[in-house]
Structure formats: C-alpha cells, structure tokens
Picture 1 (tube, rainbow, N blue to C red):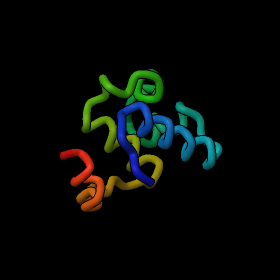
Picture 2: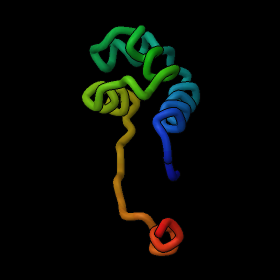
Picture 3: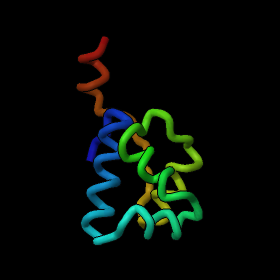
Length: 78
C-alpha cells in the first residue's frame, strides 16, 4: 500500500486496529503509551512524534517500509 500523507497513514493503522478487533486502550497498553495518544494519532497524525508512531506500529505488529518511487512517478514530478 502506498501512503502519501500522515492522515492516510493514521487511517490505515486504524483499519488494522479494527481488523484485529482492538481498542485504543488495548493498543495503548501494548505500546506503553496513553490511550489519548492513540486518539491524537488517529485524529491529528501530523502532530505525532516518530517514536510514538513506531510504538503504535510495534503494538499492532506492523512495520514501515521505505522504498524509492517508481521512475515514472519521479519523471512526472519534474
């Protein structure tokens, strides 16, 4: 899946949480952070620290993969 914005990332992470039938409280306990922090990430992800993002991803057993954009996308932006 290609993620192009913080909001899109938070929506995808929320969908995985729903899919696993987990509450924000469940994830907060696994991640060792407050439930309110999960809520802030899901609603205003632009203000979330990278460290917090990785705690949430780890709690959901997700990983972040970074790779180069396809050549056609790079050329289209020039």
